[in-house]
Length: 226
Image (cartoon, rainbow, N blue to C red; front, side, top):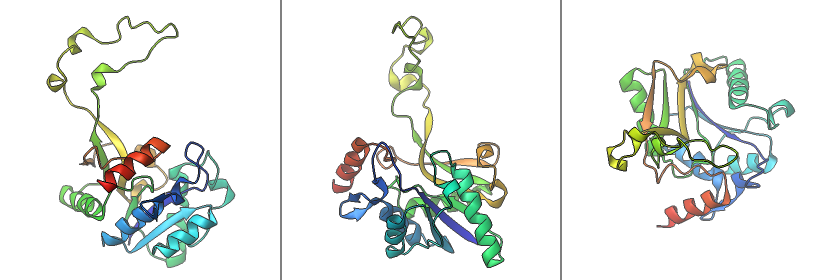
């Protein structure tokens, strides 16, 4: 069985109620549910939430919400690993079937499409991969980044060998939070996913918006409208 899990807590300190906030007339979480269903690669698309409004909206969009999260998984300290492990173990106990492939699709990535999801699954099959994680190119050279001390001194901020034109520097990539696909073996130990057998699925920067702040939301709306 192949399942998608969309984790969506009701609480959000930086952008309150973001998962139900309307983006072009559609709740934010609706974009991810529709993409997961349209990809046609999952036997079940689940939403894991502690919030009744999110649960009801998710069902309206076609996702399965078999329960509200236990209180222990609804706090700020609950990890994605905990949430996913709980749902997979519940599923296998209820349906008496083992899960083969799991996808975590964050609802904060509304520009990630069904095509991206199906391509990532295809890449997993082509590579014979244990996991696929979506990434995008780092927007600014990491060689131009460093920490600042308390006094703000920039002594040694950039290594002299990195003072070059941007196009002459080696590119780096970052997680964009849109797609995580992995085999059953990683359940309970998602923190070990970045090792041999895991491959990157590259997405463009403009489609890698991860909504955490009001600015991100406005940028996603602008991109969708344009």
